Image (cartoon, rainbow, N blue to C red):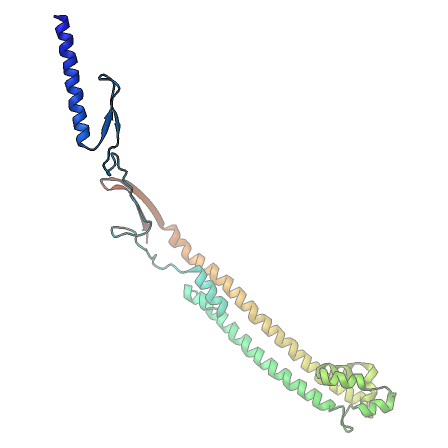
Length: 267
């Protein structure tokens, strides 16, 4: 009885192994078995299709068709950089962009500065022409100062002065007017003539200095206005940014994980 049971068990194992081998061979795979009772080793068959496949999902960053991203404009918000650049180009415009009436003051200073610069430069040019006309050409013997009179009075060569006159007339007239070495070149009443010339050139130099101050004031107005516009924009935006709150949320869906961001403003 015991022997019959053993034979029946062996016969059943053989039938099971035979049926398993046929099933694997039908799918294009081959099996290797060292014994009837050992586990089978499955290898790929002649079929081109793999036994195992890996799914690759590629996700591109950015907005998609089902994206919920939106650009939100905060009501009343002013660009700080834009305000600063506007006032750097034209003082006061950045303040007016923010809504500050102080921009009119910077605009007024700008207009006054440029008007002063133009007037002072025109005045300086006229005063320089008047002073040099008063001294006259050094080659004209009837001028208040000339080479012939200086050469007769001192016996000095005038070649260096002639070269200076040809290269830099402003420096030449300044030398004959304020350097005592060339005082002999003035006419008989040289003290009065020289003093008059010095007064005319002093007026010219004063106008030149004032025009430089006006140019410096214009540049300073641009710088101060740009900095003030930046500060005004930040002060304007501060209550808006304080009333904003960022809320985050998310969860899992059959399509995958999602993240929600919400920008809330209190007005």
